[in-house]
Image (cartoon, rainbow, N blue to C red; front, side, top):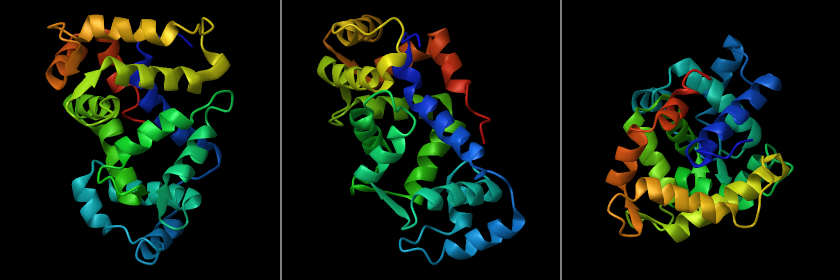
Length: 229
């Protein structure tokens, strides 16, 4: 895999792999009886999600899509919540030739918007809603939040290096050309040359948004997976 621009599509690639795996195992097949059963179970699982109509109003998914998503979610998470260790185990299934644990940690924190150490079905739905159906601004803001590890409103070279190392580790032997030790740092330097407009050593949300919106490859990646489900 060519890693040019990978920092912008790694999250979306994960979503595609996840959804395709669900299709492979038959979890995205529509079934009216199962949908009715899912609605009933939504009110009885250990962690009770918000009502479907409220989630439908808050997200960009239809009621039927929410039922399908819940069916897949409960298959992996019968208790109705996912902790970070569970999340890492699920995520690692898609990258068996690499070590996805560190990137999964960063991704978990991006989905865990209330920072309570667990992901509920609502957290899952709202994250997917942005990644698959959100506006360009919403997707880019979500990506910025992922890279801004300490949530101080800036992306530093140290934060971006941590992210890039985790992506290279995750991709393992599938990277092409073969990963050299200095590759993540070189990727970070290219990122900052492009993004850090005023050369102050950090990337702000405005710099990030403005640069991404003028990059054709990034903009194309934002639209790749809008119709996966």
